[in-house]
Image (cartoon, rainbow, N blue to C red; front, top):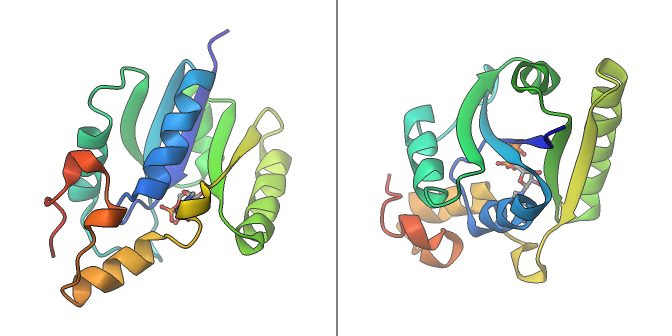
Amino acid sequence: MKKIAVFPGSFDPITIGHESIIKRAIPLFDKIYVAVGVNSYKTSLFTLEKRIEWLKKVFEDEPSIVVDSFSGLTVDYCKKVDAKYILRGLRTSADFEFERSVGQINKQIYENIETVFFLSAITHTPLNSSIVRDILKNNGDVSKFIPQKIQGLIKL
Ligand code: ADP
């Protein structure tokens, strides 16, 4: 049976933190859906189209990565694409507490799902998309935090 995983997120925008976790997961799974969750009550800075375009560019040389989007429950999307694993990154204990409850509830909703956690690289612990958005809004340089493949493309 093929091992299929979903890495859900907002990716608003993708950072080297996301890229690193996804690349580390590639050897463990046959296919990984990197899926942008479209959330009606969470507004994003960048359009869905832009976020998808950047994800596709970052993973263009990775045949096992499929970039997609979904709305609704993550577990329903997992059922749709036949994924048994949800991938998430852990930076801090705050991430852990949040992810623990989401993971445990997802397991209650769909018993066949397993959430697999990756500890962030030490250098990526302070990094998140919201900091990158703040730097961009204030005309700062985000190049250190953005994947190599999309350097210079992320602009407001
Ligand atoms: P969400 O809105 O679902 O939290 P994000 O795009 O912010 O979406 O994050 C998606 C996943 O990537 C989460 O599991 C998050 O913990 C992880 N992640 C985000 N930034 C980093 C980072 N710097 N290092 C490791 N994991 C990260």
